[in-house]
Length: 288
Image 1 (cartoon, rainbow, N blue to C red):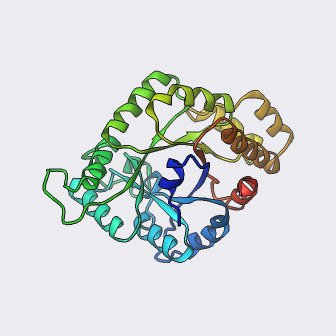
Image 2 (image 1 turned 135 degrees about the vertical axis):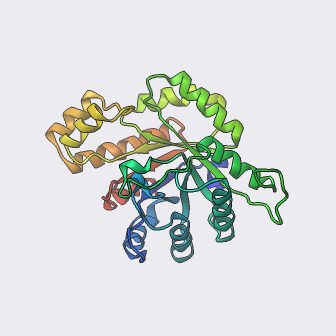
């Protein structure tokens, strides 16, 4: 199987999607979702207790997905729940289980989740986690002690093309590349010109960039994202289209964005279907 890293290095346009683990000891719900998206994607992101809410281990679930469904996984790992010993232990275990793609995240604070009295660790942030993964790839732990066998993680980080200060965002990404980041998945875009501007600004990074897309389901959703979520800009033509249409219109907009990203030379698209996994096949089928 050609890996996501190999596809990115070969400049093959890739599509990833993001799924939440279940709050259950059974992976069945997520497995059903994986079976729907597997024919259309190059890898499946598995979140790490998103919004600080208890969910199944993303590493364990990623391993199950890869072994049972022959689709690569990208496991999220946050700095919220583990100190540097725990983070390194998780990474060594993940690699041993064959899960080699990681998206490094600082993580949401426990106060917003379903265990608000839990203590957040945050001994390092996402840049520190990138440095940890890089050190393991180099064959030593964070303190310089040699490993028996090194890892070979493909290390991902996040970016926001819709930020108000693009220069600052690029400087932040330069620091993450220096720390060891090897690819980028972004927050959602709804304007292909925004993606073009970000690609131009990030050209010097020379990192694969997979632009995030959240399919719109309604005019209400579009307005909420545009008005309430920092860093998301939805242009007027898209808002007008959603005012007249619904889910099908949102899916068509997303499909057009994916095609547009391919045309402008982006490395890929990262689909975040927000529990609407059937949307993934509709959006990505023409890419396959």
